Image (cartoon, rainbow, N blue to C red; front, top):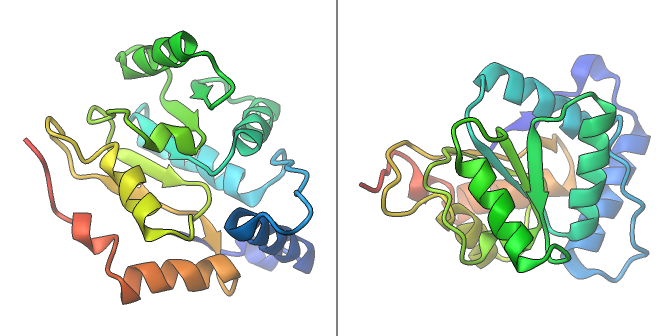
Length: 193
């Protein structure tokens, strides 16, 4: 997993609180639904830098909800990034298929934003980068997300990235999955052919 360095220590308590509230909602939906705004989110800044460094490598980004996908679309667009497509549960089935097909093409977008629905029944073995914009509480969902890329025909090592803040609730959960359950190492150095 990849953490976000607190870029020159400029991240304030507000960002930590924002991420904490978002995390609480993702885990149990019991809190007031957060108003997602990723225009100046440090994770989006990291994502843009990541995509630039990877120079057109196909990347699948999965997050928990349609609302996050929509907010990410706005956040990426407000940062002048347009090389992406998306799908979520409100997209018609045929539209989802068209967008996934377009993403799979060499000249297609480099980034596919997906809600959790993208971790169900889709095959992305042509893609080698997987980003968890958030971390599900259920280890089975983590394996399901990874399984979209870890398919027969995968010729590359799968790279999994999870942008998070140090000393946050997400960091604790990610550490538990990584160190305690060894869930990410299960896929390390493994290729399907």
